[in-house]
View 1 (cartoon, helix red, strand yellow):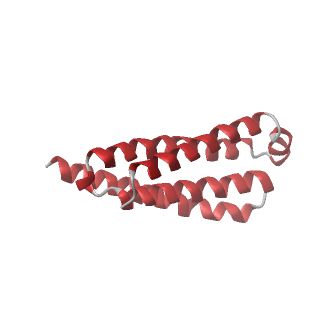
View 2 (cartoon, one colour):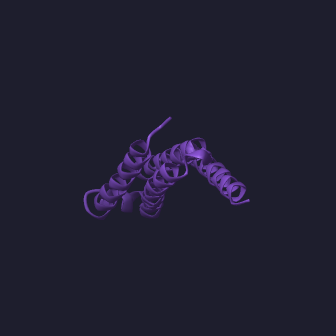
Length: 127
């Protein structure tokens, strides 16, 4: 079984990547993103990764508090989805190569399935 520190740590990594990418977008990468007209795409990737980093930290605490709810599998889907979604958008924004965009829906779909699974677990536990 994956421990609290794993999900919490992964969430912290997502958050720090989000902060660093935000800083880079505002300074070092600004000319490139402006030239590619992909500043907004890069910001979406940064936001999703940062938000889901915080989510992973909260889920880590919920797993620790309620281990019987078995939240690891949906959490894996959410984490994998956030990585795939954000990576696809980061790569699209940095390279301008449109085929990277085709991976974003896969990541988004994984996040949606993970969130729906967590919702189902929560409602089932509330009965």
